[in-house]
Image 1 (cartoon, rainbow, N blue to C red):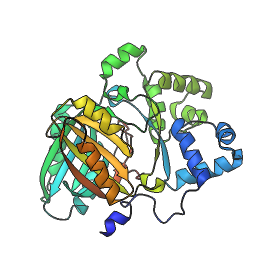
Image 2 (image 1 turned 90 degrees about the vertical axis):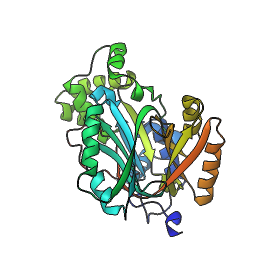
Image 3 (image 1 turned 45 degrees about the horizontal axis):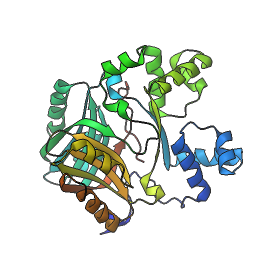
Length: 333
């Protein structure tokens, strides 16, 4: 099957393979997305100029993205949900329309268990109802929709704890002291798009001095209000097949979540309400590796079934929830 031999559309294609130096830089960025060029040069054995050129190329071509992730609750968004759709016919045009909707931050057309997989971040349950009505709209191609509200979230790619993402926003602010203000929000908006934004760029975006921007950034980072994540394109590091696994759970949800999320190739994993206890995304080398991954998931105690959706076209992929311009499409990675 040809689609199993190449990455979904929107992944970088027709690019020369990454070399050893590229992989070194990516590994260092995954360790610290804001590591200085000087430190990367010292640790990689490359010149600082070479590091700078390579890093710029890796970002420009989409081989790696460095983004700030903010706990959605801190931005007043308390409803995160995975949406799984069946279509009556070709899902392409439907997926293209849905990917442009505000509050959608991941959208891909697929084949297998579901035809479209989406991830949305919204204000509350009432907003979710309005959003579902918007999804159906006048699109007669949508046959049915499975809603899986996210209860807990785990991202093994992060070098830091992601507990902040599923914590209560109010409780989080209470524990962390001073609430975020409009200046903080300006900084966060910039970081959600570019996690390596300089202090000068942060200052310009927020209307404060570079020194103040640096102090605020360090506080936001230390308090866990923002995490800088480095997200390599799975295809560029050899994982051409990207899959959403919907896992039925009969045993302890958190144990299944943690074991699934820490498997090699796992990207994002979420404990969800609805028919599936865990919904996770993973990337792997080929069809055999996908089957092996499914077998490993099935071997986790408490897992009673796994349904796979293989992504054929990635239409949106970003972490920019809560931004004013939330309807802009984002490149895949």
